Structures are given as C-alpha cells and as structure tokens.
Length: 312
Image 1 (spheres, rainbow, N blue to C red):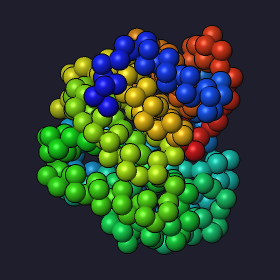
Image 2 (tube, rainbow, N blue to C red; image 1 turned 180 degrees about the horizontal axis):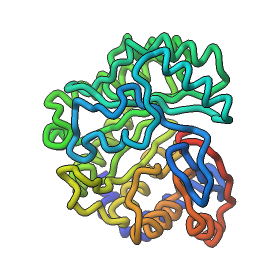
Image 3 (tube, helix red, strand yellow; image 1 turned 90 degrees about the horizontal axis):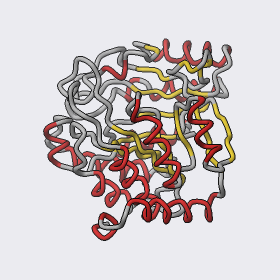
Image 4 (cartoon, rainbow, N blue to C red; image 1 turned 45 degrees about the vertical axis):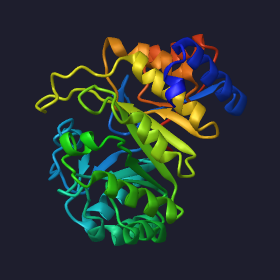
C-alpha cells in the first residue's frame, strides 16, 4: 500500500481501469436509491429508520442528520405494515437502518422477527445497515433471510475516538466483521473517504483490515459537511485524494465489484470525483445525473440503470 501512494495518479487510474475492464468489461451501473428525487424520478429502494430521528451515538460528521429524509417506524408492527405498503407501491426492496446507541449498536433484537415476517410475506429485497453487531445478531440476520448487510469500516483509532465517540471502536469493528462474514452473509463494507473532517487518515488501514475477509463488494463514499454538525465547515477530501483511494482498492481487491455511493459532496466537486472514479474502474455509482450519464458515455462506458442502492 505504501508503494501505491508513490505512484503517479494518472498511472494508478490507468492500472485500475485496465484491471477493471479485463475483469468486468466497459460497463457501469448507475443507481437511484429511494431517498432521492432526480429529474422527477425516485428510486424504488427506500431507507427506513427503526429509531425515528434519534441517534444516541451522535458522530461528529452526522449527528443523526442522515436519518432525517428516511421513512420512520417505531415498532416491529409498523415495520411490517410499512414494508407491505411499499411493495404495493412498487418498491423493489428497502434499506433498514437507524441511529445507534453509545456502543454503536442498533436495537435489532426488537426487530429481527419483524424482518423475518417482511421476508416471508413480501418479495422485497432487504438490506440492513448493521452498526456494530455480535455473533448472535449476525446469525439472526442470516436465519430470517436478510439479503445484504452494510457496515462502515474505520481504520483509525483516532477517528473512532474523536469522530465516532467509540473508545472500543476497533475491537467492536473486528467483532462485527468476524460475525457478519462468519455467518456467511452478503456484506457490503463501506469506507468513508475523509470521514475525519475531510482528512484522509485510516482509509488505507481500513482496506488492510478488509483484505483479511472475502470481500466481493466494496462501496466508497466521501465525507460531505452537513449543516448543524461539528464538521459543518470542514472541507471534504479532494477528488484526487478519493480517486487515489478508489484506484488503490481496485488493485487490492481485483475481483471485487467497487461502487461509488450516493453519500458524497455535491456541487462543483461532484463531476470531477465521478470522472476520476469511473477512470479508476468502478462498476457502480449511486445518485447519478444527466451529466453523469453523459460523462460515462464520453468515457466509452456502456450504461445500465437501476432503481436501487448501488450495493444491490
């Protein structure tokens, strides 16, 4: 990894792109998840919070703001009813998530049975954004038929302590990864580039941690300042910094599908980052625009559209 940091960015992007095209061809899947409206069109994969707008962990980069646009339930019965309603309205699936407690855990024990009922009584694809979990929770996810588990991978103890407020963060993360992969679940690890207020600190170590597991999908997202948070005035990592990380991950995980997720800076940095990511050899991208489509085609990529999260 240290040697890759010394490689010229253009060369690194070229190596990543060539490896990607040899393995996956010249194609990109552009995804529209359910939380966003683009040109009057909304995806068919909404996000549901099982804790409403509440998050006890209160990470400095988020403070629960990401929960605000989500659908909300407060009981297992409400979750089942909402999911049946969503299927009737044409949803393909849903992402079930919520705020975490002071140890990074969500109240899954209260909702596992309901998730099993959703899987039994609907045809929805169900993803969960797990937070930190024990082996028993991972096994329960598997038993009730959860289709995919999303989990953030942090590689810096400083970030765990100063941003996530988790003193035991690394231990809890390793327990979580061991449990999820050990339960033979489909895992979609996410790495947030620049999560420490825009600084790149533990992202390469996060990749190193993941290299110990059978990763077949990796999602990159990028820190974006959110209003009314301690990091509201921080600058995101530059598109070139993020691109370098994505290209390095392509070389480290040559067989894995790599995606650029919907959580990333908007505005003038967006297209620059999207171009770099496509040049680095990603297979999927969440939250596209007409500019994105044009850019992909200018790069000679075959474009496929999906109305789901980019991890699906």
